[in-house]
Image (cartoon, rainbow, N blue to C red):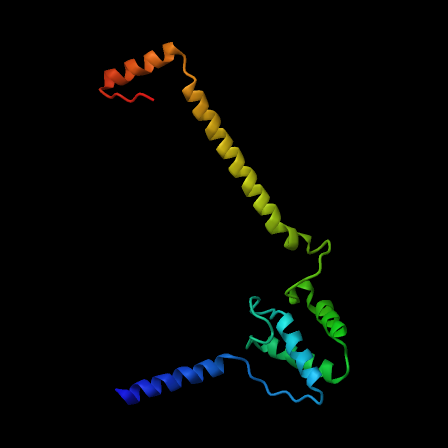
Length: 159
């Protein structure tokens, strides 16, 4: 039983190690390695869409990591690398795309949806309040008629 538990833990440990993307990269300058790690954290995998390049095992993500590595090694700045990726793949490659005419819906869409939801909620609450008020404002004749109908059906529900 103990051997089974140990082998299970080792198997889970190996699976966890293999789940992360591990690519040995050698940099002459530790600052370049930091830049590389930051860039692949900020760029989105176009295949996975919900993962960055650092976390994705997709072939395209591997290619983009290689491209990023080669550009850093060739002396390109972060801005040049990001501009290359955006020119090639569009703003979608960025986790934080800039606010411009093509991305305004992306930035303001959630706010617009919240405002629309609040307006619908306000209108519904207002309608119910008006309907309740209208029901309370019965004339004495209408109230007697309702009481008569309820009495005829055997129910007694007085407001």
